[in-house]
Length: 274
Image 1 (cartoon, rainbow, N blue to C red):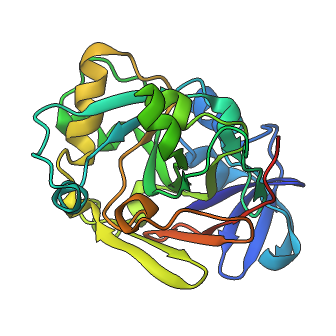
Image 2 (cartoon, helix red, strand yellow):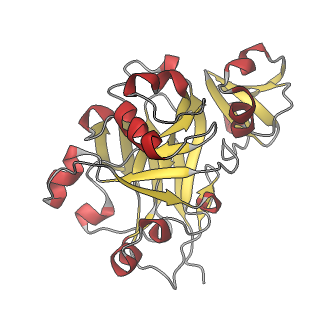
């Protein structure tokens, strides 16, 4: 299933149409928190079907309780940076206020950063509570995956040595637009992630290139912290970021991220804000 949160409520993606659903939930995050999965949406009555291009899609999960991220989790990224592979994941938390709905403009905090960067990532949505979970228990507890642009102010990262600050500007973490359930994945061990900037392909890799595969990564986080339904785990970005190319984002740039079968996540960089 591909599920979305729209201006008219929840929906299922059916080809080039959105089937709007008769559901009491405000967003997909609320569904997952209440039921542990998206399965109940299969039983919802369809109120109407509309062309996908005619409906505004919102951030699918509302405001998750926790957004976990990991640095340096692709071999290609480590090789590009000339760094040794980490033996433990480099973890951080990002503010949920940083989330941005699909197709909205990023308001660049011009007085805080001159090096805004994109990071195409696979985002994992937790369905059932995980604490001290084994890797083999992770996928059955996942509600689905979506796409993320874990935008990062590289100069802030360098100045503060704090990923949370560099990744938490309001409206600088686009997520979505659809959440795809695990059964829709052709190969959960090799999910493809690609990023274009102004139609130029910058990133192209699969999760097979991760240092800590998704089940291992989520298991390691859960060994210390309890992951609750609706929490999001951003799983790292491959080589090809602006940092790698020394080409940072500017107003007017258009970023398109494709993650497996998830609908494309498109974001435009707006004019610098104060």
